[in-house]
Length: 226
Image (cartoon, rainbow, N blue to C red; front, side, top):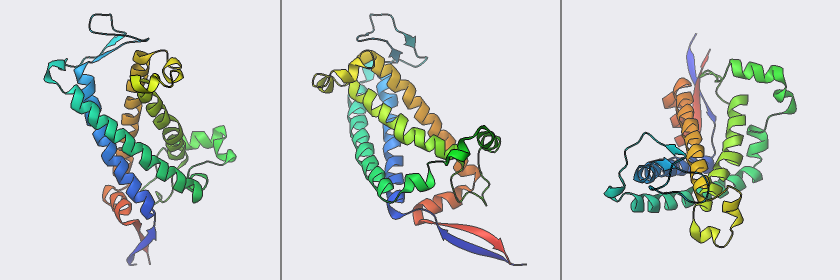
């Protein structure tokens, strides 16, 4: 018996480019978001909130407003958010044109039956040899993140901008105020961070080098016996 190395195409060039742009922008958003949060680690609910008012939630983080990190953090955060937006538009248009979402992400109705969901939950990640396609849990999570969580992040982010809400006030009104939008933005950001960490864990469990190489070259290798 001799092991042969089989190579198959896994990711298109556009998917790979948008993936790595998103990865870089996400890290920038994460670091700048931490800087913004450390400048004022208190969450309020409603329209207003300040150091002189009672917080809805005091986060167990150091208060470093005096270091002047909020301004640069906001600038980087704002720039990285627009990078994600335009990069995401390219990804969405490509996914619609190539039917990537319907072919690779949207599950069939039969897969949403309780028995199918139970099997998927019992085996939440594929092995390295069977990770050629997204499993049911991955597809559902990706759909929620792409079409739910990320748009929600942008809406709550825009709701915190006085210049935006002065023109379209309903954006902040539907969240109950600027501070409410900030609080919701914080929890949505944590949900994205959890997704990111789980994503990295899945990459490690299914072969880190193999998965990263596929996302760089577009091809995935697998072993077959002869």
